[in-house]
Length: 339
Image (cartoon, rainbow, N blue to C red; front, side, top):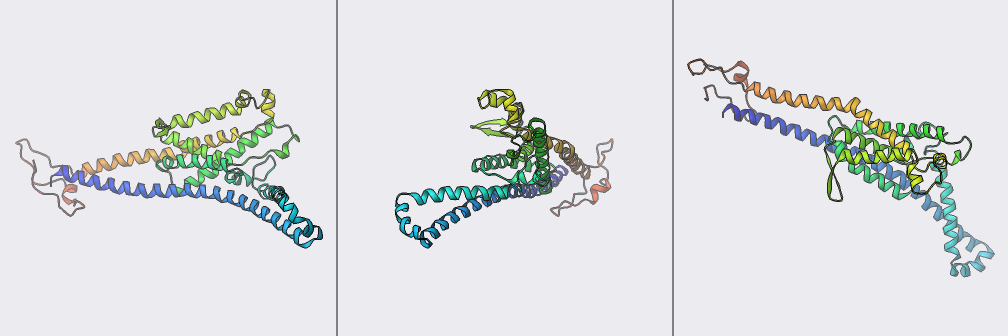
């Protein structure tokens, strides 16, 4: 086996080991993203369970009235035939469910006067299915890209999740304090959703893998373009330009006083993602590049050939480190000249 072949085999084995380690780490990172999505789904299912329980209570209430009271026994059959039972169950279940959901979620969503722990819990809460699905789609689309970024680990996935939720909440609280009139509709102001967390990972992906392509209607678009456009929309939304253009508000002052979407939370999460990448992850990317270059250089040095004398012959022995090296396949490096 000549030196060039042994060198290539050694480098190939190192690369195969690095790729196997990278695949294992990426699978762990993707599992962390799956866990984050699962937590959001679990919180949503909890709300749906509360609503279902309220509906069951309404049905049981009708059954008790129709069986235990004289008026119920006399009139329940006719009322049920007229559709009164369905109407009663729908209205009573909705009212009971709304009250029960509010009592539970009021402890977890973000509001101008909510406890600090809601800065984290609000990032996992969704009331509407469409809101949950849109955030899960965003998270699932960015997870494969973020999982491949150098330095990303499951612990850092959770750290970005918590940190971005806190920064998104802080940005939204700041906007509320600036824009909301104290005491006016303040008790009705609240925010929930994982949008700030998704925006943070979008920012990390755009900074760490800007050349990664993203398919939009069959067209591959660089991910940094896909990420920058929503952030530009959030900035326009922060100025309430969207509500003015769509006619949801008649004046800029009215739009400012009645924010409908948490654009500040989106931008707060994105800013955290960018800062975290350049403060933490970029260093690991540089170290990984240096490690790869160093390993390639080491492979070349380990198989450095002997010095050739002026008469064209070879020296009687290899460099000490090359003489002692044994390739992984068990074949020793030959001791004679291969030229």
